[in-house]
Image 1 (cartoon, rainbow, N blue to C red):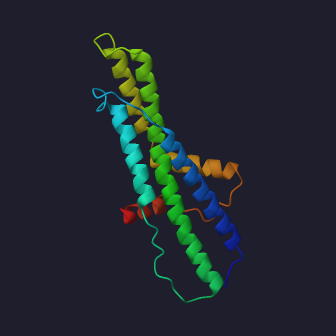
Image 2 (cartoon, rainbow, N blue to C red):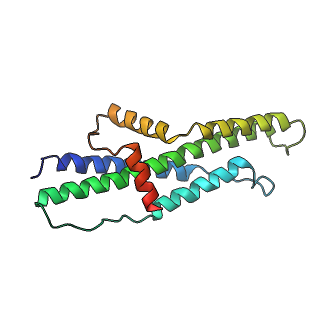
Image 3 (cartoon, rainbow, N blue to C red):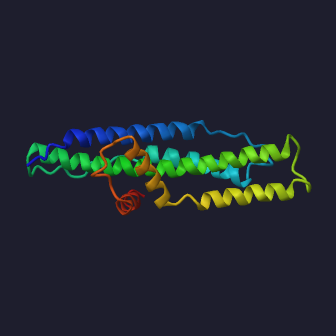
Length: 180
């Protein structure tokens, strides 16, 4: 028997997918043009990795699974919407993680640019550049799965979204592993 929440589920799927699209767009806006000598520097490499990972998420196909004909139409719709919500939430989770890494990399690029002020790196810059790289590493280390889920849930809760059926972190992690 259908529980009357399929409209709320469908709305939640649309909210999560819209958020996913917005995050993907933000990631695509982060660009840097390193010189040939800077190409392998940490922040530039991380930014390239972020773009590749974001493209990989986009390229991942949705597996609708087997369509079971048991149960009412409302029950089938419920199960399908729940499956879509897990997939959409996992994608949003993945791109949020990528986005936070890209933000950290762009902060590193800005810091590096401010340190060098158009000059080539030299011994006078070494300590400041090392400090910038250390800050990048620390920021990347702070991007945990728990932090991401908590930030997304807080944002969604503040917006008044229906969260009763949002997947847990363990479900998201399991889904992501199954898709790789």
